[in-house]
Amino acid sequence: MNFADLLPAAPDARHQRLLTLLKTGDTGAAHTLWQQELTTGAPAFQWAQAALEHAMQQGDFPLMGQLGKLLAYRWRSQWYPDHVDAEQALPKVPRDTLTVSKLRHDAGQFAYLRKLGLLDAGFDVTIAAYQQLADRMVAAGQEEARKPMSSAERALIGKLYNRIVHLPETGRVARALSPGWHPREIEARFLEHGEGLVVIDDFLTPEALQGLHRFAMQATVWTGIRYAYGRFGAFFQDGFNCPLLLQVAEELQAALPRVITPRYPLRQIWGFKNADDLPADVNLHADFAAVNVNFWLTPDECNLSPETGGMKVYDVDAPQAWDFHTYNGRTDIIKAFLRENSAQATYIPYRQNRCVLFNSDLFHGTHEVHFKPEFEHHRINVTMLYGQRENDELHRSLSSRPDLETRWGRQDSAWRSPAFGRHR
Image (tube, one colour):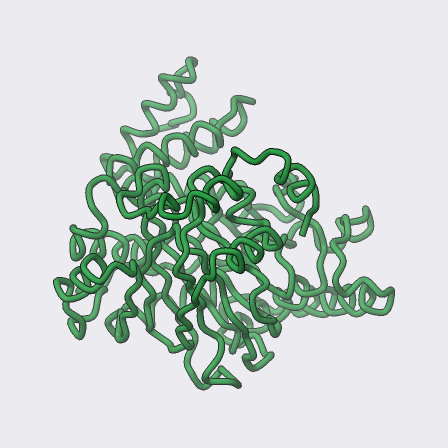
């Protein structure tokens, strides 16, 4: 059957047909229709993102995974989602700015995948091209720069750079969460001691840990390149999506119903990778969610400084009046606020398979990173965010300190204007 011939003319009808096919498991037909949808000129990815957010609100984990795969088409290549003719034109990816750390990371990942036999010998030329471009940027004094891709560079690597070329199949396991920790005890510690912070060691089963580490190492989905100090983000809607990740998210919600309540649906999954040393306290922030689940995948022997590499969590919440760009990105304002509020930090050293479960309102950040420099040793963490910050039942206001609420909230516009005009 030629499913393209059956594509409904009206966008709403097309979208409903896609959802029906995805929900009934007819993914082959769904992806055929999706490729046709992408040729209609309609805002397909905007619809798919809205449908994904709705599926998250409904707790429909299988549909989340399928919609995430549709959204990953933004990063398609000659090799993904299907092998296509090398001469076939590809749309420009959403982010194609060159950075030295990204070029070196990808050259390392391609070499790693070549060693595993997952990419063919044609990638050897690509690896050399990436390394040469990185060396050229360093020689030009652009080691920390974000450089727009030139026409010549686009002709050389544009069909590969920041695109998905390999995405391993990473299925569910018999059990993802380790039986070595007790959910009722974790809930009691989180809720009854007033800190909103719990550390869980031996978080995943060995099968789940191995599967997720393999996925993070092999999936060429590290497309978030706006971060300094060799940090990369990989986001659920951009390909950081596999059945095992969703199994962890689903099992967590079932295991901790008093912490991850029905009011707190899954909102986002992402991974972050550190390819270089990271100084302390450069990424302090709070998140948009109610509950944050952060866990670490890289083996401990990759960490050159075992007492570092972890997370610092402060005992002060981001004021509810602050907007996202302030509590998530304005480190200068956050540090001043923490000093004024006499904030105390809890430091959790890095350990593989350690999870930090905490109230997303709490300011936090990676403290300091000194891992081995090769691709195989990069520090990788996974974050799962549940609920909306606005619906957070655990948020502690500054009502006991009205001077801080006034000074750091929306009421003191005279103070805020000059401070908010300075950028990090």
